[in-house]
Figure 1: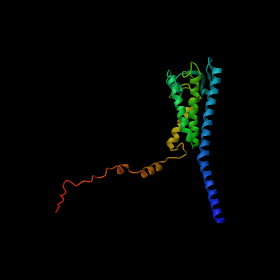
Figure 2: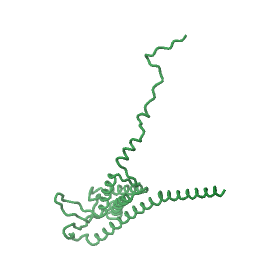
Figure 3: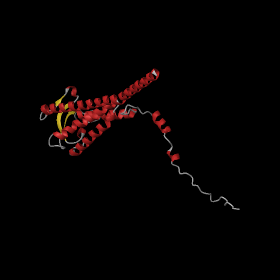
Figure 4: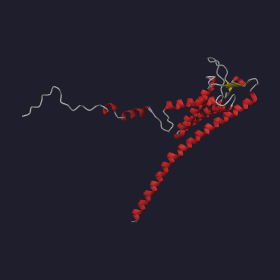
Length: 231
């Protein structure tokens, strides 16, 4: 009797422990990555907006400031287009696109289990929201606001005319580059990694639909078969 009771208690404890481990694996880890994703996005937005407030207050209407060694020039430019001054004159369209992108990133990030992907999506969201705030609150009006750009690279030997940009644009650029790199290496947002071997194994395990979907032979007597003779 005691042995049976002890075994039952042991099984219950084991089940409870297994449930705790499972909950930790499925609950805390995604929550940790979602928190990291949110912190990266929030930090990107704060840095971008504070920088824009400072440069507008100190540089707008003033002569551009060239940094030492000519690494870049600081000048305020009001951009009605997309990142890096692309598509000027289509402000409201880019505002709607930015809203859609932000919502899509948030929905996509709800099942995050990868630290690199949490940082990557955080940069993308922070950059999108940083410029979206400008479009919503800056002149000339809601959905038509001009984005504040203020960083200008010098001319390079084989490239001249690099557009003026801001820190939000940089977040989008680096976030996009990281996303391409992670996807190319097979790292997935859920923490798994897809390799060539795993893809080949999955292809081998997949059922052959051509065989399964093949029509069954018709139940009929061949045309050249001899007729049955009844006695």
